[in-house]
Length: 188
Image (cartoon, rainbow, N blue to C red; front, side, top):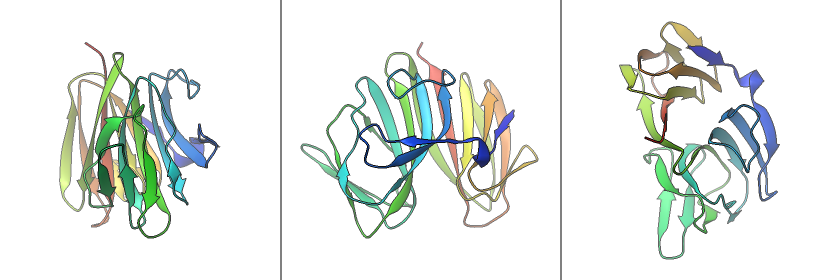
């Protein structure tokens, strides 16, 4: 297991120049926004606007803080808040983000279609969870801290990266803390 501390994250501009993103992990290491296989990041969204288009990429969005965001697609609108399950969509679909009541912070997980796939699950404390990954990688992201992963404390913004197959014990040290379990697997 490798612990990725918040201090190791890389802050960079959004692809469309509308803000900044905090990169937690990317593959291959050092990949750009155009050539990654998968990427996990957090972003602060302070105003309404279009999402960057990522051709050939699948994306999952989770709201970490703030009231929420409406995603306006061509023929549908989806509203997300902190209690919403992680929302999966094709990142090459045109979408505008409309804040519901002020800024938010979000978690973005992206994988290159046909090369990698991903699934995101939000876990809540204070219960202990056992999280398994059959193959590929398991990335556990603790945006607010308050978690112990196989005995290793995660502070705010820290993550744990584990190669599968694996089963990890995750225990919340704070009742309201959320932990995001991200399973990344190479295409079969």
